[in-house]
Length: 426
Image (cartoon, rainbow, N blue to C red; front, side):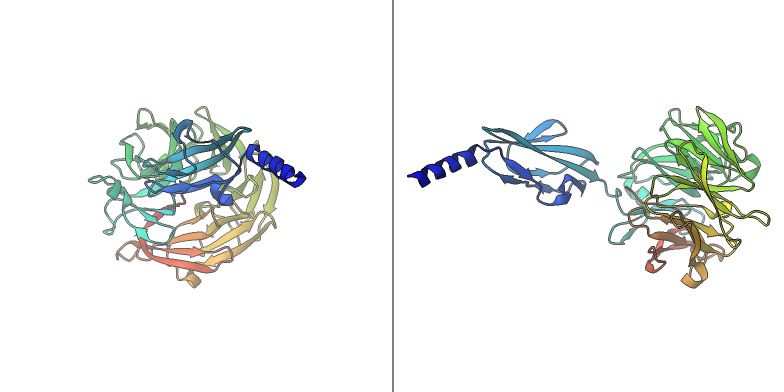
């Protein structure tokens, strides 16, 4: 009788205990899914339940133990699963990021087409390494990117694509689908090269024309590019326009400048040209300063007010030239650039404060590199080689992928045409 009483109490306690929930796998709290693909959410439930409820972005969508999720529109969806019994409610939260066909992998911007004189294009390489050429025209039948595209700039789920010759100096597309949003063909500045914006309302471009170098304001609301150079920016270097903490902070000759409220503020001056500013793994920013016959190249670590707090001089064989395009993945300790006089890609370790030669183009079989970028997901270095750029042959580009040790992981043939920019969708 005593044992039966204990068993009855135990059963009653188990029946009225609040239910417990757990994910099927530890990674279920954040899930990435392609649009139009189905995902069945089936959390583990322990204990008695009287009611189930699924809420998607605040709206009830199901009252079952499992839920099949499917969306045709890219975006981030917050899903809450709740179970209830006599003791109360228990909830479990999912966050599902739905990506479009181009929301992952690698994007490669082509300066031209297979003729070397035609429209620009964008290639997409998926996670398996499969290349799809000219995805812009696939997404926008009958439309083409203007020739001589230089920059594929990402902001607020859009890409801004520049063209030196136009007629569309700036083309704006959806980052997930490549669907055309709008173009800017009214430009007072010619030879548009690089673009940047930090608010989606006003942007800036620099230009190839050295006699008219500087930053030109872009009105993204009225879709115009000004013909007036931003005062104080005439020495802006023809390299990608850098941004730091949602502010344009970039190189202007021997100065580091900031654009604030439409005005240029000089932050620091140096003895040689500024080579660029990039982010390292600890969320700090490093500035490159070019070397010369009289001054050694150096890297300067900046504080939150963009003042130098650490400076490291490099050996005399490293020049960190301003046209060497300083770049980083922002997730590890390495900063990369090209020594343009030798064609060698070098890197600086922000932890050990040492510089080294990383990839010798001649040894790797690279003829003429037109772009190099670091994949923030794994630190791999991607180099686009355009071997026929001066020979008059087909202007295709091959893609070389090196791991952090400098080992060639993969070579992708004919990934685009004179690739001028590489982007890794996040």
